[in-house]
Image 1 (cartoon, rainbow, N blue to C red):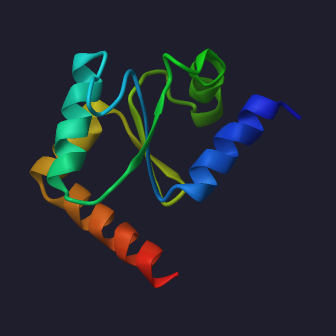
Image 2 (image 1 turned 30 degrees about the vertical axis):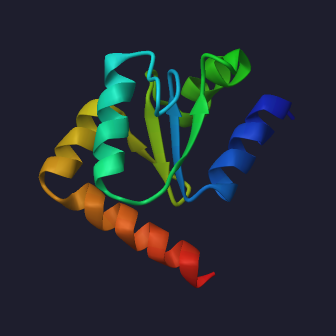
Amino acid sequence: MNTVVEKIQRQIAENPILLYMKGSPQQPSCGFSAQVVQVLSACSESFTYVDILQNPDIRAELPKYANWPTFPQLWVDGELIGGCDIIVDMFKNGELQLLITQTAKKKTQM
């Protein structure tokens, strides 16, 4: 089996709120990643990120694994939520905050 896919699966399994992005939350390398970081930060829960620019193997494999061609990608509780537009829309209608809060609560109960 592909070790990169195993690494992706492990990251998704181990991190309840995981963002694959270009750059870091402190220094996003693209406008879409910056928008998603802003929205996630507004949810006031901690999240893990993977800088795909520092991980070209993940950058190459994740779109195939996720069946989602673009970055950033937000994974919550093992499921792909989507990219920038979806995440911003969910934030605007309150769904994202609810999802993030519930996931963070689950994590603290474990």
